[in-house]
Length: 477
Image 1 (cartoon, one colour):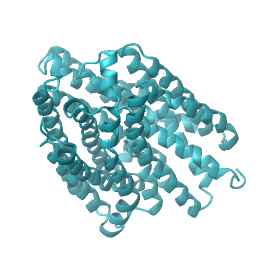
Image 2: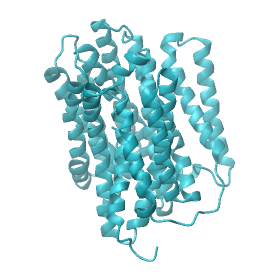
Image 3: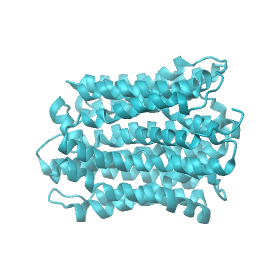
Image 4: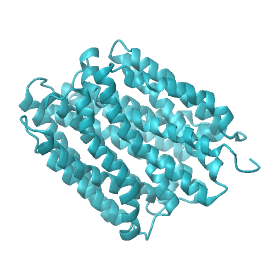
């Protein structure tokens, strides 16, 4: 483009909407899960796949989405992503049985994997000419993520209570149609680049991740010592090893492996992986505790999680940048992970005769504060550690790390909960015992993250302001 687009701020509204929807789609289904389980016949163990089908496809294909955006143009991929998301939302909403529901959620994840990297590329194209405008644009883009997480929890409750659970998916359709109509007139175009597409690598890493999650979720039902569990886990290891081998050999890989030699990048990615592995199980099982043990209906359950999600939004936008400037990203990350672990350990004290005010609210606020403090500096460290020309790759890798951690953490804690009684619907002591065990396990993951961050992250004075703003753009519910 020869100069700044006069419609760039209108275009930013659409880009921020994309980020809002991608994050909202991870959180909006939480309150609706018991209704989905009842209507479609999900088992307690398989219910987590309503979340995981989206996250595995999203996280596994993010690197491919970024590559396709470079090769075919960000505007074209942005529009294609909205179309795929629309189709997936329609399928998930009309699903008459389990496999159709999971297919729709996976297609939604594919759409999100096309939208997310192309949206950030379009933002850079629109505002890269002016550092001050870029900082402001990134801040607004970043604020859309916690807003999406908050809106998803609340809207999920309202829609499930007063309409029906399919509408948590149908809500995407008019937004996607408006985005498709607005993309061409608002978004800048760019010449496609020459290069190859590592489809094999993308499919291999996604299949490997899916196999690992499947094996862990199924293990409580078929047995940890069963041949099926170990064969599927072995297949996952082989597939993920094949992905690494493919990346090492290809001239144009999805992920250049040598980037992990960059100081702090590998450590920050591991921190993000463990953060996702701790946070998502807490959010998932807290929803189930509120509805299946405390007896909340969908709307009160969604409203009960609003204080936690509002604190996350405020913490990411206001508290985390100030803490980073004063104490540095390493200290802020470690402190946040310790608070997250403490909040989840507190949640593990839930009882079958518990209450929201005593058992949920204070502990969830401590966990939310920890999440908001840990997420921003660890993500910002990962992005700012890479060379400027590789910031897109670094952003894709760290987002993938968080999504992978979310899927594997939820799968593992679902197995822990099932082994401790969460599959016995209607038996409140058994359900509570299972959920409590999941909170303990998630607290252990957060504690391990705090220890590893303390040992492996190098001290940095600050994370650049632009990076701080960009970092807040990937909060997952």
